[in-house]
Image (cartoon, rainbow, N blue to C red):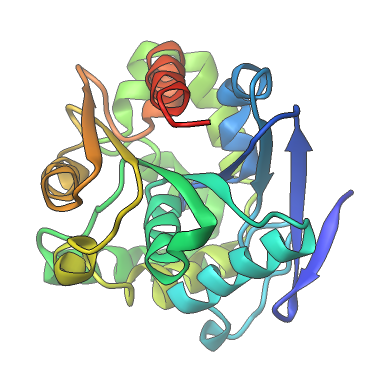
Length: 271
C-alpha cells in the first residue's frame, strides 16, 4: 500500500502506466476506484496518478471538521506532487475533484499543463439550496451511516441514469461507496463542499487563467450543466463537451465516450 505523508495526513495513491503525468482527483461519492474505467486506456499513453483525498480510507480520516477545507485539499495535492517529484502534469477532476483541480490551477498555474473538469460546479446555481440540502445529508451520514444514505443518494435524479444504463457498474459503485467513512464524508461535506467558492464567485480569476481546458458534462446533470457552460465561456482556452442522455457519473455511464473525448483533448496539446 502506497501512502504519502503530506500536510499532516497520509494519502493513499497509485501510479499506472508511463509517459507524461496525468493526475486524476475523484468526486465526493467516489475514490481512486472510481477511475477504473479510465485507467487501462489512459495508462497506455500517460503515467496516471490516482489518489484518495483526506477523509477517504485508506487515506487518513481526521475527526475534526476543521481539518477539512478546499485550501487543505489544494495543499494536499501540491505536497503529493512534490512527494512524487511531479513538477507539472495534466490535471483532471470530477465534481468535487474538478473544483479542487481548478482551484489548484488558479493557485499554481505553472504546474498545470492542461485541465479536465468533469461534472464540475454543482452548488453554484442556488447556493442556499445546496447548503440546506447537503448540510442535511452530512447530518444523515453521522446519524444513519453510509449504507443507509447510499440507498437514496446513489439513486438521485442525476445518478439514476447509471442504474438504468449499467446496473452492474452501479452495483460496483455502490459497493465502493458503502466502504467509505461516514465521518470522512460528513466532514468533507461541511469543510470542503459547503464552504468552497462557487464557479461564479471565481469569475474574475477564471478570466485570467491561461491553461488549456476541457470542460465535460452530462446533458442530464442539471446542477453542473449551467456551471460547465459558464466555465467554458469564461476561461479563455476552454472547450465544452456535453455527453447526451448522461447524468452526473459520466465517466462510469459512458466510459468509451468519456475516454475518447478526454484523449482527443490530451492528444491535441503541444508535446
